[in-house]
Every structure is written in structure tokens, then in C-alpha cells.
Image (cartoon, rainbow, N blue to C red; front, side):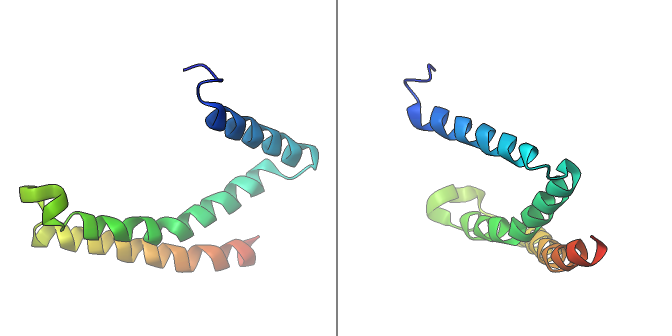
Length: 97
């Protein structure tokens, strides 16, 4: 699509590019910035995974394709791993520098 057809996306994309260039001009270490962003992403993983458990068990939404007990266990296991990763990652980021 043309930029004038998707003005909000084009504006947001331009703004993100501008903010990234400002961070580089301030002389922030790109590797440290990447590691911090990965730690914050790991902290948000449990929040992103929990809605899938509710959605995949909703008969109105997925009809006959709802999760079974094994699938629910796997999703709960992934949420538990994501939660542990979120708890461990942020302190290690500050301690390990």
C-alpha cells in the first residue's frame, strides 16, 4: 500500500527509525541495548502466553478444536518456563552487567 493510504503505520515506522537513530547518536552500546530488550521480551512472555490457554479452551471460539489435557499441560509448562525465565532474566541483567 502507499504511505498516504496507511498514514498511521508510515508515521509510526518513521518515528521508530528516528528514535533508533537518536539512540545511536547518544552513543548507547547497541549490544547492551539488544540484551536489555531481550530481557524485557523474556519478562513479557508469560503475559503473552496466558491468553492462549484461555483461547484454546473456548468452545465458542475454536469449536471442536479445543485443547485436550496433554495440550493444556504443554501450554502450562511453557507458561511456567516463561515465568521462570522472566524472574531470572531481569536480575541477571543487572548483576551480570
